[in-house]
Length: 252
Ligand SMILES: Nc1ncnc2c1ncn2[C@@H]1O[C@H](COP(=O)(O)OP(=O)(O)OP(=O)(O)O)[C@@H](O)[C@H]1O
Ligand SMILES: [Mg+2]
Image (cartoon, rainbow, N blue to C red; front, side, top):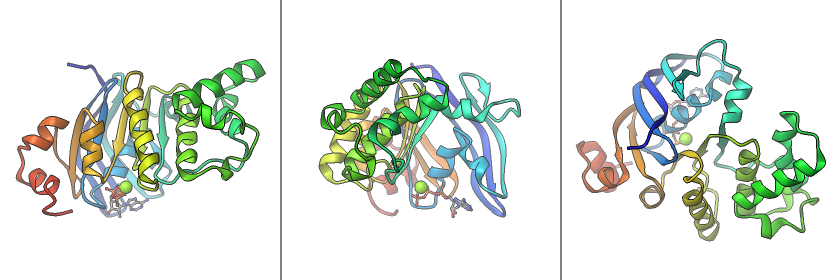
C-alpha cells in the first residue's frame, strides 16, 4: 500500500448558491496516477483546483472541510500559496505557453523562485524538457517563440514548465483533450514515466485513457464522489450501479 500524499476530508465547495462539491473525502496516494472521471459539470475541475487552492481566486467561493498535503492543512491561513503551487503544479486543458521563447517558458518559474545563474538555468531547462519528452524535438529551437510550436509540443512544453520548479504533485485537467492521437500517446507515455517521481492527479473524459494510465480512479456525479478504488476495480468490478452505468457508457 502506497502512502497518502494528499487527503481531502469532508470537502464542501460553494460557488455562491451552487453547491459544487458535496462532502468529498479522498486519499490520494503518493507516486501514483489518480484519475478523476464523471460527466460534465460534476465537479472534477473544481476538486482538482482545491488541491492547490486555485479556487481561492474565484470570487464568491466558499470552502469547508480539510485538504492536507503530507499531513499539513493547505487551507491554514499561514500557508504561502505561491509555495503551495510550487509543490503542487498544474497543467490545463488548453496548452498555454507564455508568449516568449521556449527557454524562457521553462526558466520562468525557477527565475521567479530566485535562480539567476545561467549554467544552473540551462541545466534545469534541459532536464525539464527531457522529462517532458520534448528536448530532442526542441533543442535547436530554444530561442524561438513557444507560440510557433504545434499543440502537442506546446502541451509538453507546459508540462516541462510545470516540472521546472520541481513540484511533488502534478495536477492535469484534461491535458490531452485538445491534442491529436499521436501527441496524446506521447503524453500518456510520459505519464507512465512521471508516476515514478511524482504524484499525478488527472481529469479525463476518456475512459480508455483512465484505464490505461491510472492506478486509482475516482468517479464523480453532481458534486459527489460516488466511488474511489484501484482503476482495475473501478473498471472491472464497480460497486456502485451509477459507476457501472457511467463506465459502460449508459450515461454521461
Ligand atoms: N468559476 C466558477 N464560478 C461559478 N461556478 C462554477 C465555476 N466553475 C465551475 N462552476 C460550477 O461548478 C460545477 C462543477 O464545475 P466543474 O468545472 O468542476 O465541472 P467538471 O466536472 O470539471 O466539468 P467538465 O467535464 O465539463 O470540465 C458546475 O455546476 C459549474 O457550473
Ligand atoms: Mg472540467
